[in-house]
Length: 182
Image (tube, rainbow, N blue to C red; front, side, top):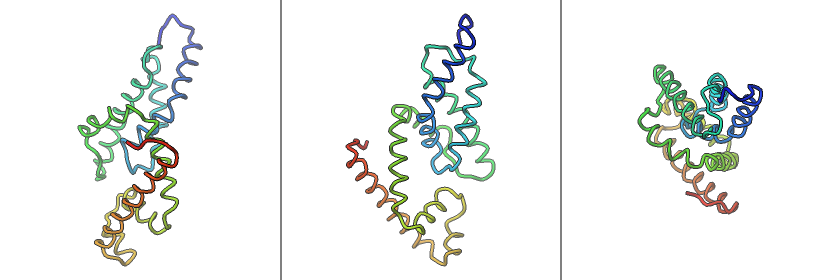
């Protein structure tokens, strides 16, 4: 930040920028960490880091670009910690390749997330539970199949059908809202 500026004014400007970009930052985190139930926790961690680095931000420059770069580095470290614990995560090269596309319109990601949430609520509880297990728990599908006394092949077919149903529901939701689906 510009040292010639009033520190209170500089802090106020920084807080305004930080507040204005929360939705975009959360959408960006969710896109880079799909299936992570801790996106809001990660956002809070990033908010703390951004606040600690606020002196490095140059007033008048692109806050979003600066914040997204901080997010990228924080999530790389977070993914490394998860990978060291045996979690399957995107590698850094893939994230670097897809993140520019995500930065283009993070608000669209939030709209997509809301549509997905809406469509998930329309599913039967046992189908939501299967999706939750598959994409958020990190546990093997075979273990879940044994626990509910179904074959892994049947669950894989069910997951395929659920993904297709969710995709169709999201497309319909976007069409109803008059939002183009890219």
